[in-house]
Image 1: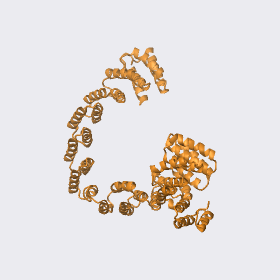
Image 2: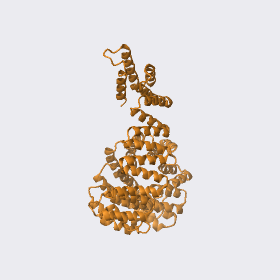
Image 3: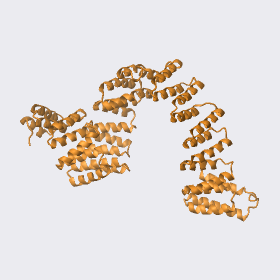
Image 4: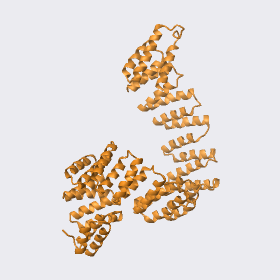
Length: 566
């Protein structure tokens, strides 16, 4: 665009009376050279040199709008707004037929918050081009920014008088009334749209959605009933009316009433899933298995009716995960990836669950698979490092974390988590000095990050700094008591401090949320039971730890002697 304008401006210079003669004078040629030189300096980013050249040219041709415009643009590029506005206003006055000049000036006014001046420019443009709706919208836009709402509404009135009613005008007027708190007029705008286009069902949905946003359930219900009168098989209206009002309907009964609509092939899957989202959210907040199971009946229907679409499997994964069934969630997420491997969030869930289950072999393998699809994702390298660390492949883990750190960019929290994991790997490798250095860096960048607090607490335990370890573990646990690592970490810290009774609650939470697959967690639960004088219970947990792959020699001795061997 810049080059086009410069060439066009040069053409204007040549068209100045007395210049465009058959024999071009030396002055004209020299001025052309100056203009070309100024253009070259501008393209090179030498704005001051370009300004000096054009100012000299402007003194020779003070009434040439194109030169004034270019000077305005150059001053704008150097952030000299005062001079930019002066020259651009000059260009507008010298060539009032060129729409580009006031539009460019209006953009500057918008950036500077000079909204009334911007509105006046577009008012002039509307007078010049009364059939261009874009100019009306920009005029109203500046008036709204200037808090002249009534004037903006008058602009929309003028546009509607000229062009007739349409959705864009109605939506903008509706928004302005809503912003003023005038919900009656806001609703009336949508009603006008329905009256003008009674056959367009989507406009009725706009009105129903508006009433729902205002918690006017009865009004919304009437609109949905009206929709079914003109469109008897409208799925959105059927779904909205299922089970009565939100306040009255039983959630599980409501979910079961959705089944006939979910079984319809002609209803879009996104519309069906939108009905499930509130229940997925509720399960995520409460862990309610009964609601999760009712919703899962519908995801089974989605898998049958829309089997080639990954979304139904992904929602099922969310429901299983948030209701505490990680293995089943993993199956659904893997089924999702079998259909669509490009969803990073699903990969992240798969890797996260494998880490929670401490299935380190599979975690490293799947993270490696994810690298092929997301080679620049720091989190994939992070999860690979977790897997490698769990397999005692410390060099592989550190290499992955080095890459993750480079990929993390300017995300301080992610970099803190990466460095905390680096500290953990060094700790496991027996290099406590390097571990301390990494944890110091992690805490400088994100001391309050739960992952940092958790890993640092386990490092402090190894250093026998029990009090600080317990504090860090407690803070991490409080951010997410359902995280099995945080719960296990706190239980371990409390056990080390001799607080055996208090260690029970977080240990139980850890086992409920995936740690029942970890030999070390099962063994710690046995140790806690022993310290609380429950010898039979202790032996039972030690036996489970042995069966899941724990330290055979140590566990067999505990079981045989029915005590902790110091």
